[in-house]
Image 1 (cartoon, rainbow, N blue to C red):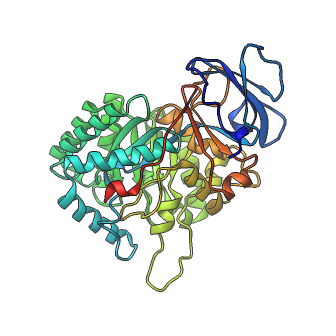
Image 2: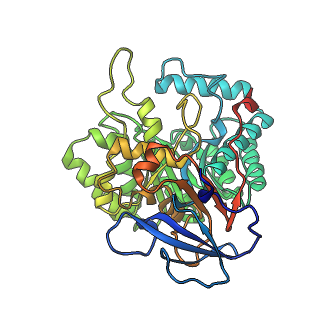
Length: 431
């Protein structure tokens, strides 16, 4: 970075200032005019955005000017779908062949051998420090909830959530098969931990003789206790997998007023076009939101020895956007047997999605998928407008091309109007 790209070191807490000449994706602003990236001045006072104006507009003379001419400004991110409890175990429990089945086996073996409270707290904290350094403001994580340590794991999560309060808002969803939730005792245990810890109800749903009854009772409980719902759905290239349609049918039957998110939705990409249109129309009518996990699905889907994959594992993002279905993009698993890659960096997830799903020409409103759209469903993340919290991420870039080519190099993170020192933790801590 040049000296013009660095904030002054003597900026006093609470001192009003103006970020001059920064570049902002227009979708985050109230600007009109057609340009994808606008040049703006952003005034910040007492931790909030006072105003956003075209660059070189008049501002109060007493306010300090900070010139960051080659910086692009985004709101802080919201991670809509990840797995904090299994993160950072790749070195000790790699996936031997990259398949879904091997990933599941490796996770279970690691969980039974290593997941002590201290181990989980240490790995979760490492992951959250990565996320904080990348500008994450809020996160929804799925927690393994299918064995006798369920209560202990949720207690550990709540301890970590309390330790991170004010930096990253955390929300949890039980990761448990809908077949297991057909059992009355297990359902009661899961519902209890979700309610006690302020979580979101859900699980991973797969086609089986029990799935419809389990989904129905999950909707009943969510309706009774005012809970949101979140499902792993159709994470497969099996065209007969139709969990999303079943979930949408239930949501539509109840009037579409519940907050219901479905993740993955991969099988939609290999189904008959007529059936797909019916399902997508139903999803839109029922008010479902979707989280796509392009990085993890790219790693897992269509993997077979000696065979080049023929598809990308992503769901039908453009077709959903055409129906105004709320779309989030998430990172999913991070450095575990389901995905050896990732760093809790939503910008990386977004870049993956742009390339994999052609979310460009124009990029348009797609940046909302890692910021304000999940922010409305999980917590935090607002547009760059007057009155919003000054929780921002600044990158050395003037265009999307510069941003993506350099992978967001030269990042600055601002929280409550203050530039924070948030270094990425070193992997040696995990040795």
